[in-house]
Amino acid sequence: MTPTSKRWALVICLVLTPALPARTVAITDEDCDRMAAITAEAPNLGWAGFETGGGFAPIYIELQRQRAFLIRYPIDKLIPKGQRITQAEWVIPVVYCNGEQKLYVHRILGEWGAGVCHKYRSVRPQKVEWITPGARGASDRAVKPSATPRVNEIGDLVVNVTQDVELWYSGASKNNGWIVTVDDGGFLRLSSPVWTTRGNWKLRITYEPE
Amino acid sequence: MIITGGAVGPTTWDENNKPSPFNTLFTRPFNGLYSVDRVAGHATLPVIYQSTMHTSWVVSAEHVDGYLTLVPQRLLIEGATLTSLPVILTKRNQVAFGGVNKVYVLPLDDQGRFKPLLSQAAVASASVEALTYSPKFDRLYVTVEKAK
Image 1: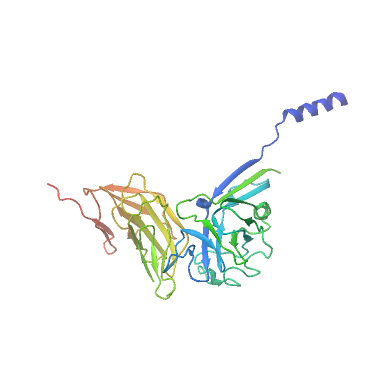
Image 2 (image 1 turned 45 degrees about the vertical axis):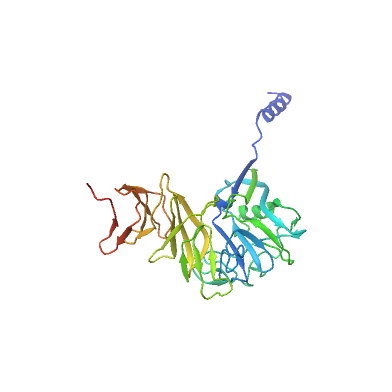
């Protein structure tokens, strides 16, 4: 084969070889293995989403001062090895906002689990307190927020979380999920993942072979 | 701390938290209809079980000192219409539910979560409401219609 014909063979080969496609997968709150709505007003409760008068029930996830929502998506088994994350979008369903609000999304740094509440990040297998109650301490959550979207209308808020998902997928950081808050004294009402509208908290991840 | 069945999921009554003593966790999708939930606690594990009357929904939920925590496990027993509270068969690590002409039994793992390996037995009762277990004899008792 002459050099010219070799070049042509290579070109033909490249043209005929299909590009390996990117793939998008989605998981929702129905797949989540850990969730909690925490508040200073009921410091031992793990599902203090909405105040009902005499108690709490997660009809909504209401974010205001001293309240937070924690969620972890088990992405670990979702994406095969040897991939590159090209995009990750997190859909947060907003059902009420009174004027423009700023939402803070932080990665949670410490392992949390059974008994998670405003005071503790877990009670079993051992009692571990948050550094700052409500998971606001520097080693409770990443210092720098992953995203701080401004919210001024109801509907699906789409947050770019590509960097976090890359960190978790690569193993550079352990996937302990996110904490969402409105730190500036705002108020935001989000759809409850355990009431009428399950499956609205979606995480969409697009990846392609490295 | 008291945990009781509710209309949309178990409710906890925390007498030590005066500002918010009654707290509810929704354990099944709400379709606009309120139902009656029955709950029972595991004898040795920090887990409660729930059956929702006249539906196929059963739930296991972990608690810490009575505070319900994390994500409840929800199962639909296909074809079932549940009519009894959950009854834990402690020696077998199983949980039983009464239904229409049936008793359903689900095995539990070492954490008290359901294993999806349902077994069921037909019984002569249009609505199995009275169901109890004897750990001493390791037997489940169910009321049935008297044979004619």
